[in-house]
Image (cartoon, protein in one colour):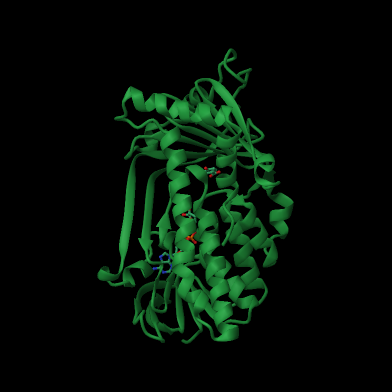
Length: 398
Ligand code: APR
Ligand code: PHB
């Protein structure tokens, strides 16, 4: 098998890249190790930056997103029983975010690719290795329908997520990795109950962080900070609701306090996810380009992971199309540096929000007071609030 761009992984990064290349008349093939049902059912992120929404619309994947996506103009911070709303449009020249599940975006992109005669998308095709990544004809060795095959390409796009194989094709002496683990995880639940809020709530509580998010007007998505290694079985549903109510609770006498109740309903899924920060540099080795989680991970606190995957792929598609049309490698040569600048801004913002909202198990009372002081600063300074808003809605694509 031969193609121009061999794409490993049918997550948001691989699927969007395939769509952009196909529309520009560049051949590609997508290899995905899982089956379609698994890929479409996986519960992942749910907040799209304005730039992500614009990109999906521009490539024809915005129809259902336009109908079902919920546009949010702010978030609420809760700490010390207080409530503070961060307004996005006023601080960012009118920008906002859209609540739309990553799984829905993936379904839309898969449907477009399969229904509109898009490039080949092979499910159950597990890439085993990228061979000769620094040559002009790199190869992807993969396993499909019981046998081993080879896809010969001009370029390989490693969009195979954090546990993929593409990243490992870069020789150890050519990479640097930067990593930080966090001493807590998120217990995430999906519940068949209308959200008890109109906008997302991020809460810092001495017992731990809590987040109230949503998937639709009828489905809530909620998270609790829990110790690493937590067994979801230790969290019966009543315990989850009790803990969420406590951590998200407000004090009627505090600033902005008032009264608020968390509505409970049937929990349909529970999972525990560790938090990780990771970057591999550079994001290119010869003809191999890494994009999305294959190259970097952020903790989920700022909802940046999916959006970073999209911005990498926009940059890569632009560079490949430029090369295809003009023969110039200028944008391809700049790919890694261009992406990494934005990646590190997202790492910075995600670390800031994570560190500010999660009490660490071993932290001193002094650090706890600093967290509250940082939140108080955001609540009382238009500049500090605008800084959060600008990062949350997404820094400009370069
Ligand atoms: N061969 C083929 N496919 C593979 C292989 C392999 N060896 N290894 C992994 N994959 C597939 C996975 O099954 C998955 O479908 O690659 C895809 C990678 O998709 P994602 O993990 O969703 O990564 P990405 O497209 O970069 O999107 C980033 O995912 O984890 C979230 O928070 C993150 O929302 C962000 C988004
Ligand atoms: C989610 O809805 O899954 C979500 C929202 C905001 C975050 C992280 C996750 O910061």
